[in-house]
Structure formats: structure tokens, C-alpha cells
Length: 429
Image (tube, rainbow, N blue to C red; front, top):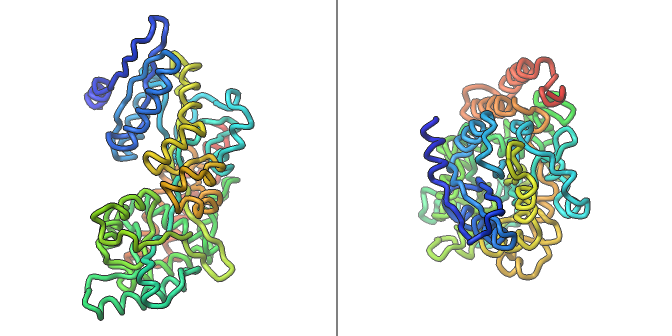
């Protein structure tokens, strides 16, 4: 791990702008090599040019778990070589003690412009651990051309999705595509399954695994019903292979023209609309179905934040960089240049952004009402909670254990983890 960290530091890319001797040098970790890294670099370079400072950029691993492990190594050592970190929405409780409280430095008018659920997610024990950078949430992608072909509306409930998926799947197979499926999603035993399964459970009124007050709520009839419904999709409207799908395997099936519906994140839109995509201009986006006709539509909140390390030697400048990168002009630039979803509500009506992302206005309600994973309330124990949940769900989906038994055992396990519902976060430790 020491070697990895050393290579990580050596791999920093320095931005030299001929700054004066008194200027400070900051380091920011803002993603792996690729479009996200490139656009972050452009924004930080612009800040550096305006302020006369210097910025170095750390390209971190693609894998979220590897990225978190690397960050934890830096932070546990109170290493001052990284000033600003890109933080997943579910890491706030885990990393909270290593980051500055930004609340005293952010005007209320600025905070009030962001989605309230994001600000709430980023606030731990009254401390604003990070500023929202861009937001994600689960979406339903559908083949508009096939809905028209089979005279079907966009499904409002999971029951309607099942019926429509069956109809289209049967029709397309009769028309000569034996590989066609009704619905694909992320079923591998990983964090993505936690996101998918939370959407099912909450849409049926089954709660959030652990509620904001620390109560373990997952063992209930509505949650059982949600998992039973999802398990019934395997080998009917969803291939058995979905149990090993992450986001990219799911996209591969849908983008190749072999599925009617897909649950995935917003980043997929740009890829399925690319020049060589078999489904280009044939796809629509909608909010995920509800558990019943009058039920709740839920999308799991995702996205990334920017926080300032407590160990930074230049906290004033680091805070200024974070506020610049998360500002409205910078979020607008990122949306137009890379289709990153803004966290500032007013930008969902911006004409220039909507020319690039015409579907964005329809996502406002999705992001505003997205469900939050119980990462803040469970703190350092979130990874244990999430892995326990996704494993219980996976066992149900694979047929190795019924939903009621899976959730009953999960409740027992979570009770042990929580030490009788006294989560580390709720104790303020």
C-alpha cells in the first residue's frame, strides 16, 4: 500500500502558471483519468489563473472502494499533501472527522441554491462536511420505439413494467431476437445492488434499512414484498445473468438493442446517444416505477462532493477552490462540457444547459426527491450495513433464501453491528 501511495504522489500533474513566490500550492484529488478528471482539471486551472496559486492533480483509482481505501490511508496519517478530496455521497459519515466544517464559510444564499437533500446528506452532527459537486440518481431508460410499436405507455408501477416488459419481450423474440429481455438492472452483490434494492423497498413503503433516528426498519412486510417482486423477474423478464451485472454489463445489453427497459445512472444517456449506438434516438428516460398506483417513486441518490482536509496547510485557499468548483458558473460549464448533473436547482431551467441536455428539466423532481442511503446515520459502519443488505438481497434474488428469512437474519446482523441501535454517528463519536 505504501508503494501505491508513493506512485500516487509521484503521478501528480502540476499546473505551473508562473505564479509569484508567495502563492500557495494546493493538491486536489478529483477522479480517475478520463472526462471527469479533465473537466475538473480545467476548472481548477481557471481558479489557479485567477488567484495566482498553483494546483496539482491526483488521479485516483477508478474503483470507488480502492479510492476510499487510498483516501483513508492519507487521512489516517494526517497527510497534508492533499488539500481537497472528491467524496462519494456515502462517505460523509465514514470520513467526517477528517474534514473541515465548511458551514461557517458558505453563505446561506449559496447553500439554499443546492438540492436540500444533498445539503442534508452532507451535514453530519451539524457540520457541513463537503459541498455538492454533481448529482446522480437511478433512472428508468426505455425503448420509446418499442413502446410505440406495442402501443404501451411508460409504466407507472412495477406491475405495469412487468406486464409491458413481458409483452415486448415475447413480441421481439417472435420477431427473431432470441436474446431480447424485458428489463435489465444491476444485480451483482455490490453497492449498486444496494441502490437498486433500496429503490424497490422504498417504493413499496418498506423504509430505508436504517432510519434517520438509528432505528433498524428493514424487516417489514413491505420490504419482503418488494424483494419477492424483484426475485420474480429472474428468468422471466430479466436474464439470470443479471445477478452478475454492474452498470456497464447492464448498459451493454440495453445499448446493443437487447432489452426494453433498463435501470441505470444518468451518465449512460450520452453513451447510448453516441454516433455508433444501435439505440441512438430510440430511448426515453423516466422516473423509476412506484410500488403501487398511489405509491412512491424513488431513485437512490448518488453523486460526488468536494471536501477540505483538516490537515491542509492552506485551508483558506482550499475552501476558496471548493467554492469555485461547486459554484453555478462552474457547474454550468461542467454540464455543457460533460453532461454532469448540477446540484444547483436554478440550473435545471438554464437554456444553454438544456440545449446540451434536453432531458435535464425532467430530472429535477428525480434529484430533488431522491432517496438517501443510510450512510450518515450509520457512520463508519455503513459499509457493513450495505454489504449485509446487498448480500441478503442477492440471496433472495438467486433463490438460495426466501425474502422473509433473508430480512429477518439481516435485522439480527444489523442489530449486532449497531450495538443495539447505538450507531457510532448517533453517539457523536
